[in-house]
Length: 330
Image (cartoon, rainbow, N blue to C red; front, side, top):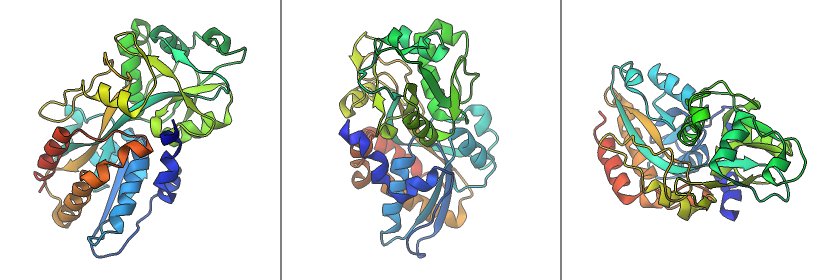
């Protein structure tokens, strides 16, 4: 897991700013400025990429606010940003609210870890145990074979694509969850305490021995560990670059590049792509900076950095389709 521990450090000071929803322009003034907001899941790699982009001759400066997928989609619909970001593709009803049209680009991918702070515990969860923890049916670590201590769930308090993907998995493996809390960016949690953003959940877990929650794998560092989970074939798997890639290979993104698989049979079972949201029309003088920025993030130089900070490099065929979609914006 050493590669995971480097994640936020690798993102540098920009990631620290995202803890409070702040943003920063960096670089020269020659290439234009862009503002974006949304998912905290990919914030570590986005901020790294945007920092690198600002140092290139093109000089495009990007201010990205890690405010959660829900807030990002709302700001995108409200046209208060140049682009949005979400871990869940926009729904048809949301797209209909955007008169300028929408292009959704898969930009990176990764896993959602069940992160926990319980020194000395090598946690392995079957599907029933995983659901029961977040349903509040398991309240002591001794029921998971990890000693007598109160178990406290930490979940997202904001509208979150990470939550949507995590609860989609819970609904896929547990009828009790599917018929109870169900799935979505925000749900009525049966138990636990809330925190804002992947950053907030990770920080809360880091201060709470006996805590367990869910975060993008890049945020598993310090006192936190990632549990091994059971996939649809019954294999118990920890999140690694290899196990995540294996699971992502089962996802058919489809012609609109928005597919998902909440319970893959191979690899680590909670994986997702994450999307950049662009306006199809009316980009004006933002068009060239937008295309420059996302041509870079889809480049081999940018994509090859993903594994070292806890993400998964996009498959070549996905990159090709995303680049083609990027060229359709006007």
